[in-house]
Length: 421
Image 1: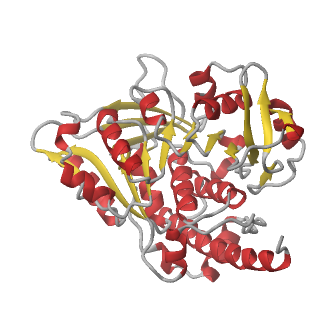
Image 2: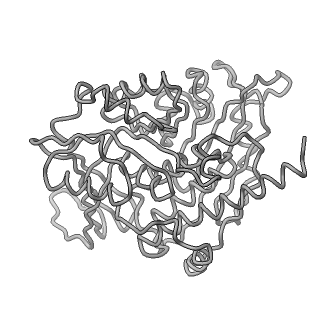
Image 3: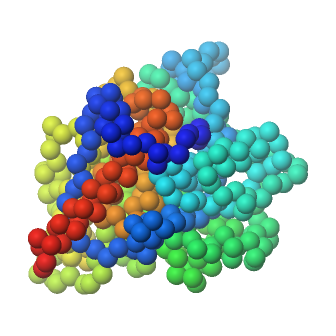
């Protein structure tokens, strides 16, 4: 989470110059569906304050050692590069959200040690409100050793949890109420699950939407999913959680089990992402289609020659069914990923968190999925590619968002005038 200058100061002209320098073109904004603008988005459009996102979960220090190849047992090797930076799912995701223009707050805990002080200073440098992070006088702050394999472009994480852990009794009612005041969305990475459940219950009572990062099955996840409005999960999670035979079957099963969830996004790495979005109204049986067949039809529409992220969406308000599971009314969206030249790939550490930070922005600003998925894919690329210097990458991502959002707003208005029905 290296600090950078205010990303909103980068002019659009510089954005195009940086993208040309990186050898890629700017993604054209997709044609949006008409949908009501959120109160937070309306406030931003009128020059008001940016939306507030509250996160509860992991923040830590990452020690990233890049090696030529992963060592064999009992090997002694030298690193090619060592970086020390802030990490943790919540820390990474809300850093991305902050650099894209949101106002994040974090509920977590560190110790009063060198690592803890560095974590707080990095978060504060990015404009994140750390006043709800508890600081223990004793113990240790959480940290992770990360081995980045330059040959396979993979990373291996060895995590040491913070001690003593955050417990619900340490989060006072006054602090919980203050942290939620004015929040537009709440994010959980399913760490600190007892405290997270307390925050989720209060957020639900206040009718604040909740996004859950379901990376894998963890203690407390099932309870938190009962409060979820949105879920972003790893490729393996849906089938592991549901026991389904395939990914589309698992997504229908998830929405069938959790009627409050509005959409589930599955991140698929270099294959992009898949989203199942629930409709507000029930679809007729005449529009019923098998979930696996629907996914196959979207995959056939992918332009294999394209190198930039795109979104292929099914018709709206279909009855998407699975034998033995049931059906849900909604639509399926397939998001493609940007093709990354091998020479530009650094490592994937924090890429999924950057994607979630962009999704949080999209939700807070009323961005339709057709725009949100390609944009989140682009932000992910900025995290893992050697496009430009690290600070410039985040400025680029933010500037791209501002330019794309304004373009989308203009198109949305024109689209509404040309298509009043």
